[in-house]
Length: 299
Image 1 (spheres, one colour):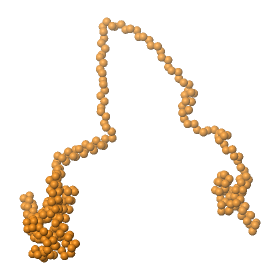
Image 2 (cartoon, rainbow, N blue to C red):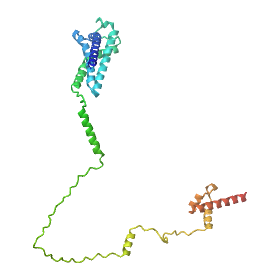
Image 3 (spheres, one colour):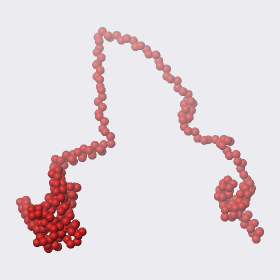
């Protein structure tokens, strides 16, 4: 355990040393940039702490915060890292910044690039005030999640088992019914009451007259649905007389007189004269045979 702790301590100290040296290198470039955009000597000396210091604050916040607050801290860290990189890059491209011989407010020869660089350099301190205050407020109001202990895990497992067993019951178990038993006192024999009184006869009860068997059978049968038996009434029968084969053939000839041969089918004849499918097919064959004979005679 001690070796592990010593290794972590050495790693942290090495990281602090590297960060301190990197800050010293960046401090020179940011100080010259601040002087070029109008800062005095004191402001130019403090300017690197504004940019690189907020980067360190955002890095610490990412280690403490969680969720959306942590993502916000990472965005701030990335934005200020890119801004510091751009200003260090400009400091390397413009040698006049090293000797403070550059014109005031002139960081690039191209005007749009110069305006963008001046806006970036002058807006970083204002952004540090806003983002730094927000990060500090988020860190102070952050409440870390409680570390689960053995007792907490046992309680959660017990609650889960209770809820699961309760949900598995199809219906609630009724409470047991306690019968209300009343103990009656035993009769006490009295010595002087030895004579028995004659029992009072009760009038005979005549049984209710039973219905005849035929009536009961009829009542039971009346509840059942009756089936249609016997002959069909004359009213329900079709009033159309049954046609002979000659009559059907005559009606079929009349109905198909104007039909071409392709239209003379069993289904068409059945619909035209309202007959059975078998009769319609027989009539079709007869009519087509007659047409074929007539056509042969004409030829």
